[in-house]
Length: 51
Image 1: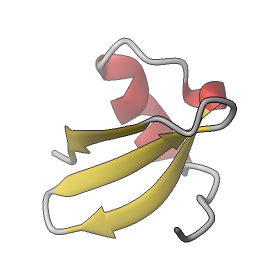
Image 2: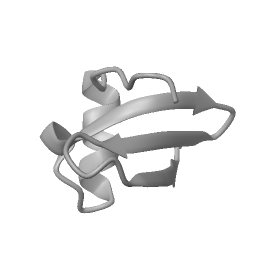
Image 3: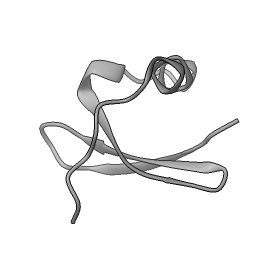
């Protein structure tokens, strides 16, 4: 799996909108209308719509 990147300011605001702590999540994919997030410590994966 690719390493995640730190989220941009806009992505941090989007992550907060879904009640997640942006300091705990990395962005692994930005494709189409979806963001794929990977948790820094547990490596769990989540997808949220990128509006």
